[in-house]
Structures are given as C-alpha cells and as structure tokens.
Image (cartoon, rainbow, N blue to C red):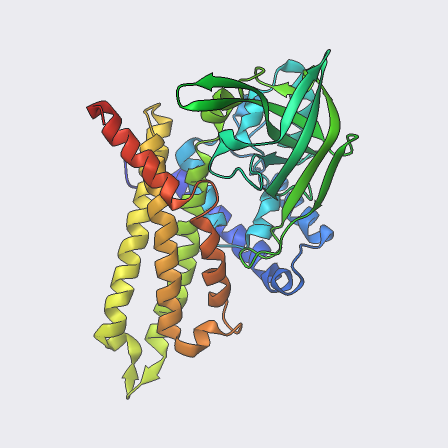
Length: 386
C-alpha cells in the first residue's frame, strides 16, 4: 500500500477534523453533563454534514452516497473518533448492510437513509447472546406470508433515534455433530410496528449521550417483504457487509488517542516540577515516545486493512488485528496521559477522565479482544490443519 495520503485524502482529513473541532467539540461538555444530545443540535449537525457532502459517505455514488473507498472512509472515521460519539452519530453513516436491500426495500429504506430522511439502528446482541450470535433466543416463526417475532435485544446503539431497525433473529435450528445450530434471518422493522417496543437501556460510564436501548418483540408481525436478503441467510448478509465495522472501531480509537496524546504532549511541555518542564524527565519523555509509537502503529494497521479491502483481498485477520491493537492501545494511551497529568488528570477540568472511561468499551463491543484473538489465530492455524 501507499502510506502517504494523496491531495484528495488530505482534504478529507482536514475537512472532517475542522468539522469536529468547530461543530462537535463545543457541545461535548453539555452532552457529558446531561447525558443526551438536544434535538436541535442533532439536526444542526446532520444538516451541516449533508450540506458538506459527507452524509452517507460510506455508500457508493450510484445510490446517492459520497462514494468514498474503504481507506478514505477509514480516514473520515479516524477524525470523527476525536469527538463525542453521541454527537458524531448525527454525522450520518447508515449501515452498509442496507446495500442488501431489494428494489422495493431500496425505495423504502436505503435511499431515505442515504438522504438523511430516515435513521437506522442495528440489533443483534441479546442478554444471553453477545459474542455467541448463534445463541440468540429472539425467534421468528412463519405464519403465511408473515413472520411473528418474539424476544429481546439489548445494547442497541442509536435505536432511540431510529426510524427502523435492522434485526437479526433466529428462524430455525439445525442439528449438527457439534450440537444445535441456529439459522438466522435479517428483518427490517419499522418504529411503531405493533408488538415492537423500544425502551431505555442501561446507564453506561462510556460515551455518555450515546445511549444503548432495549428492544422488545411481543408477537410482532412482519411481512415477508421486510426480510433483508434471504430467509435463513442472515449470516451471509452479516459476513458480506458487517465485518468491516470492526475497522471503524479501530480507527475511531486512533483518532481519540491522537487527541489524548496532544493533551499529554502539551502538558509535558508546560508543567514544571523540580525547576524544569516535566517533559525533560526520562520518566515522562519515554512515555511520550511510547505513546506516539503505538498510535502510529495502530494507524498504519487500520489503513493497511482498509487498503486490502479496497484491493478485494481477504482482510478478516487484518481487521481483527487492527481492532485488537487499536482498542488496547487506546486504553494504554489514556491511562498514561492521566498518569502524566497526575491528580488533575482525574478531574473534570480536563476531558481525560472522559476519554479514559470511553476507552473501556472499545475492547468489548463489535467483538471483544478475546474474539479478535480467536479470529486471528484461527486464520493462521486452520490452513495448517490445527
């Protein structure tokens, strides 16, 4: 891959970073204090993103998106990672899985999502089925041309704003030598559908204002026309469109780490102890060196994985490596930045304690660090018969 950015890519970075600094940073303190994003601020961010031409930038031009490739979109997400996730949600990146829509569904779901007329949410996780997707209990049974869904989803990000939800549901079970194996189908479910309830989820210490919701299905009747992809083809849809979301988490972490690093670097060059700047002490300067080395390494891992996607090369292991390293890197960088700031690092005079809290969830969602290690090791060992 080419490690340098071309002029257009540099422009993308500059434009999105400027947007985050001007349109996101000023509202972060309010979101931290209230735990929510005021509707008028959300709509303002959304409108400005559309005017800027970056809304739905992860979709191809033929359906109305900005047509960025994976590397360019990774750069966008890296810069958005610098800002509050609750606020950046309204920058608008609908789920790529909507590209699996058929012609009728495109008019009803895909195109309105790309235009910013509708917002979506993705629902997969359940109270007893997180990493074990096939362990889900939420079940749909067919009744003529309809499906009746029963069950619960939780930890569903963005559902409070969603006009419709993309839901993964068990629709059958096969017996295998390793035990029962669920068949999964993906459904498009509109807010307001009878038997479908969206309610407040849990209070998380990470990413205040970026709420997780609980979805409840009680005899919720969905027509067959709202199956996304094929019946029992949920894993095919998932594997085609969703695995790259781990790359988004990774590159978000890189952007946030660079913002944290700037605080640590500036503080090290200004704070004096024992008659000199603390950056003069090896105990601090070596930490600064380690931080930037890890950040740069994570950055290159994410860009290399995105480059492989653009070239149509197998990328599952590379994306898992990027997600694993970047999320764990962010934990180390935020912790070190607080250590450099001393007691003040834990005070809300600085946003470091927020970044520290926010960093914790990154090693859990979109596949835990343990799941990423499983993906990496499996990719390496399977060809050898192990």
